[in-house]
Image (cartoon, rainbow, N blue to C red; front, side, top):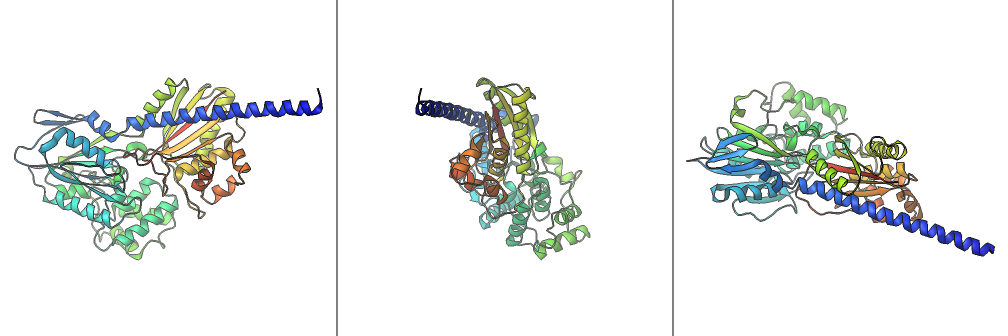
Length: 465
């Protein structure tokens, strides 16, 4: 055979191998998407409400809690969060005309048409005037409730930003500035919400205090690691174990004590000195008439995702529902776990699906555009380059990753090579926190639109022979 013939045969073989790899990537990507969608379906807010809320004669059963419906009083529905519109729709479907009225606040684009409950839309993650107006309407409705009334409070992730009602001496611009600084600092959601609670009349048990002496049943969809009820939407109906002193320590540790608006710093200093009212604490009798019921969370999504992965033929392990820390470090960690699975069959043999959930953070160092999921995926892409047969999908269950229109992104063993061919320096994009633009150029973003639920993020890692 001539040299040209040998070269032609070699080129054809390489082309066939490339086509096979491309086909395998597309199959793995479709599998990852299906696994993600199965997780989403399990935490549909209406599904979650129907799973725990039942009507039995004149009693309302919420999980293992039984509450008598009012005979003389009213049933009011209030709340806030990205999932609260669908939660309210499920409650309307169950109670119908028994509901006297109500207000819930959701993120722009997350509303649905309801008959008995008013939907208001507002900004997230930095609050706006629409949110303040909605929060004031909810607060006033709670304060007007009497001892014979029953308040159903629907709480989900995003409620902290969507229900801004600053304490006296703090205006909305102060809250906006403090929130923006905290989000960019790498602070955890527990730390951010400690600050939010002490700047709000609603958060940190403030809504329960406003509603007293009415009975309150709060139905809560978790978007925080560990499902801590006092942290979800900053705990409007939950006793607050944190203090002004904790808030000062957080601001100091994050290097924000001199950066937050002066009114915010003074408020925390006054509170730590006992000169401003603390949030209601555990043991306060006002919580005797409050019932908080968890209706769903990240682990529910992970278990449903695992079931789908097994149905697709993957050996599957749920590694953790408590993934935290810097997104780029989490991306490197899960990619190393996948590489080990390929080499040794640990923690699960091939074909493997490794599932994680939780909420990572991003410390902004550059001026790019992106969120924690695309940053995690970009860090993973750098780590799995050349690790044949590994794919990572990291995506937010709310359908929005930070300030972007994407839920997250796909990364695999070919991502880095494709980026180089397109003239993209992946390491530079990561350094600039510009992960959205990186994956947008490659066509690797996952865009779902608003899902109207929110149980943090899912990471789906597939490894095949």
